[in-house]
Length: 77
Image (cartoon, rainbow, N blue to C red):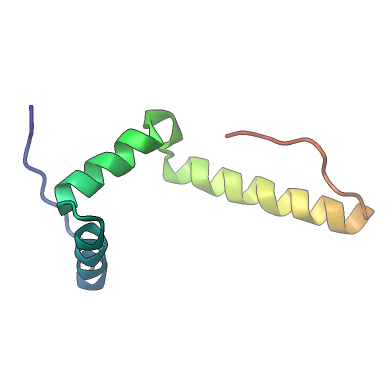
């Protein structure tokens, strides 16, 4: 079932999105759906989750700089 959605977005973003959708030969609605279908709901993060991830990344960079070591383990959020 399709449902109409209204978004408030910066005009330049809307224009860029429309050009991108047109270049891919799809509607803006279809492109929006495809982005979220491909991304999956597990990858949609809240602002606090994104902030925590940025902080962790900065701390990891700081640790590797201060100790001279490269991180070998990978973390997933």
